[in-house]
Amino acid sequence: MGGTTIVLIILLIVVIAFVIFTTVTGKKASKKEKAKRYQEVRNKIKEYIATNDNRKNLRIEFEKVFARKGAEYKYRDVFDVIVELVEPKTQKIIDTRAYEIEGITTKVDKKNYRTEWVVNTLLELEDAKRRIAISEKDIKLTKEEKLALKKEEKRREKEFAEKEKAELKAAKQASKTVNKNERLREIEKINKQMTEKFVPTRRKD
Image (cartoon, rainbow, N blue to C red; front, side):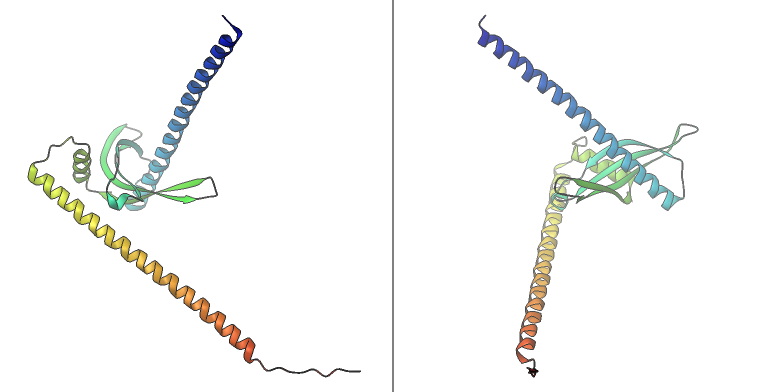
């Protein structure tokens, strides 16, 4: 076996080891990030329950987390989250609820972003379960139901597109107004400079 072959084998082993290491590290990091995200959402749900129901010291167990889809959620991270409320002392499930959770991401600096989780509202449990089941194709819809669902999706997409268009138009108009005001201020400044009375000063010898 030549020296070149040995070097190539060593390089191959190093590459394979590196790939395995990065894969394992990536999975661990992803798992850690997911656990952190779940804990943040769990805390937000606890805060929501404490504020709205005046109930504390509950354990929150996730039953289902489902990302909303569609045109209106293209730029939004909105989830249907089904949770079980557990009494820590008795370990009994005292309630099962569904919440609409949204992640609002803001830029911290050039490379980092921060996501703030918000509980938008308490959902109707059966409606949330049905919506998730339909999306995951656990429920078979009739032809009429599929058509009605597509019609509703198109209506919502159209509504969202019109809303986006209106917001864009309003933003452009606001920008024009700002630019116009800036130009007027600049013209006023120039006119003021041109019309200011020149007061000569006498030179003292």
